[in-house]
Length: 537
Image 1 (tube, rainbow, N blue to C red):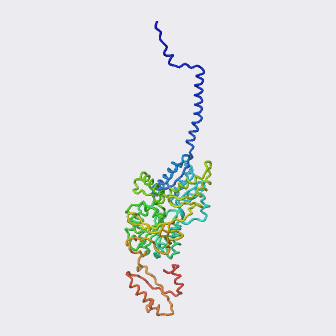
Image 2 (cartoon, one colour):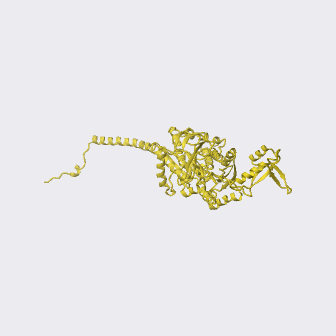
Image 3 (cartoon, rainbow, N blue to C red):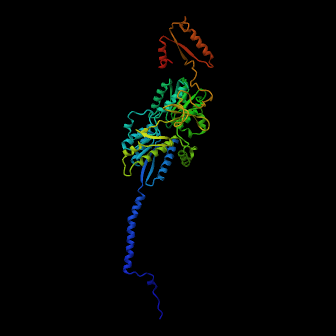
């Protein structure tokens, strides 16, 4: 008989009870260890603190695009070097509307639970958002500041930090430029924002010009660009008023304007003959800081203008690294822009993130108090891309160094001089050796509109409709110098050595000078006072 071995039984090992017990015991020990350690590991991985940062910008403006790119670079740099603390940017569109900015702030606080809000390139937006931030105890870092700081600003907006200085310094700088070239009257040009943000700048400029013996002859106000359908027609009509109202000054100071409005303004001004010989255009930093972003045709229409720019160092390794990152990121996000260099707002945006990260470094992980966070922000001090960052009482402590530039050539502008509040005009930048030149004209050679070699008079010749008034003493003790008499027709006649000298000098001029004599019977000092007080001009 043939016998077969049972293979089925041999397929399974034979365990006794002790072996089986040890096997399950080891299994239970490993399982318990994994159950204990895995949740801890998962918790450790997800335990990174995330700080939500709100940003209110104009999505469609060049400035808004630059700000968004720069903030993204700063956040990415921080997150890559911080394993246990991350930043998350939450953007909202202001649409250049203060009310929309308020709505955006409320949404960021209520829905996104942000711990700080950044942005607002216009003060009327920043002031309203600061109200919301103060109520919710959320710090607000603004890229703008009022022209004139309210006396109780720190009490009204305790959670507001203004990264921009007030306009008083650059207004003083402009007044010094006007004084140095002896221009007596100016025309202000500004885009009239709906909430009156221009009023403070006008008041500052009027006072600064008065201090140097000049005045505002005419205020050319343009409506908000977003509210007009035909900007070309609007600009042409406003410029035409300079002729119809017989305005003689041709020194134009552009106080504030959006970039699209500036482009239309200079295009039409050049077509109508307002950018040429004897004309002067001076631009504040809100316009000049955007010159890096416009094409050559726009620069050509602005050629010869003077501009005020914020000074920053662009030859440091820090800046060059940022520049490379910005170009790569901006061209990938906004290829339609055509120009990929960062403006000053981009530098300020990057530094705003650095303010937050430095403040967070001083906080303990258990601290979540908004007031403690704010206090850390208010003690922040470092050198950023935009210059010295030293926050105190809600504003920057340091005095800005301003650059005076000349719009010319394809490079868009060239540097002429520096201006420092404490010293006036300086040939070199702050921190280097140089001599104050407050009592002289700009250091560099200026290329003026229409005639590069000749300093513009900055005014039109008087016309028959608006003659120059020459004051003549009505009563004198020595008639051989000046004599005023009345002829048979009742008309005044003027004679004497001084009158003859005036007529001979007038005939030597290379242009006609319409004028009329007017007798004055008061003292000479009284006449001078009336001219100074604009009673007589």
